[in-house]
Length: 460
Image (cartoon, rainbow, N blue to C red; front, side):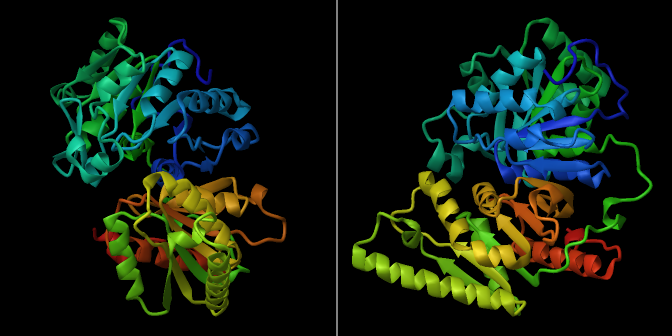
């Protein structure tokens, strides 16, 4: 148990210390970034073991349980381990889920509801990113979730309504229409309290625009025994409830990260259409080298003995080329290609193999930009990094972090890392992230301050 089940009614302008539980790394960082931008100290941890040794004084503790592909039992064990960690005690729980309802999120909500004895406020909407909820159904840029290409590729046989998924996980559910949110925070808080009194365990909230998220954020802080289940949309709205601080995160001291090669390596594990547009944009930038890794090179059982020798030669040549480019201070982009055998289920394996392949150049570079949650986690695990301190965003959904001192040797320079979900962003998003890291590197080298946001990001 992390928070007392006694009365926890709060002022709408106060904010409790949070424990954020996410099922993938890019989502964890995205969720944490809103709190960091509000001036709160925010760490992202890669597992329950890391949370066991986490500092208890951090304002917002975000843990990636890496459970999106887990069985219900595996996910439950991870959640219970995090809840039991000393650094988790006394925190208000926020469950981060994918805005398009990927993974076994409903089963995880059921575990948390049972452990916390609280009503789950389910709001995956993120209107700023084109995700809304109406009639208990997620819409992506106006298209019902079940009709999107991603859902049909990965979940064609699944129910797309959030309440039905929660009901299947054993929870008593209800839906709160947007008209209640339109009536304001007090009316919303009263409706939530009434639902809880009626035995509702999970309340799915329709959200059509950002003001609905602001209203829900304010209402949730007034309700006893409730926890939010949301995408980064609501988490950012919750962070905005923090009173204004004297300095924005962009003007704070920049952690020292000098001493590495002044190169940024971008790793693209996502095969989404948006990620491909971002690759095209990057390839057009001066001083950038682009390499594509064929997935067949990463399948150890897909080659004959002769073929394996050829692949080994190709891979060694590629890695040496990338390492040489990093040594020259060039920015390098490495993407995972596709072939006729590509299967979404291969994602974790390919991400691990790609990270292993790129270990040397990634370890040498001053900064990394990684798109795709599984790719990001694989890279950090390969580099034996289990904790990140969140600094800011180069734009919504692109999170700038720096490695924590606990994960590196005393004399090893820290490293800037940007993460982004694969299917988000503008064609220039990865390039902007790389530029933001270069700006932060320059500031840390000269001991100054910096605003990490590229000008065009602010104009979006």
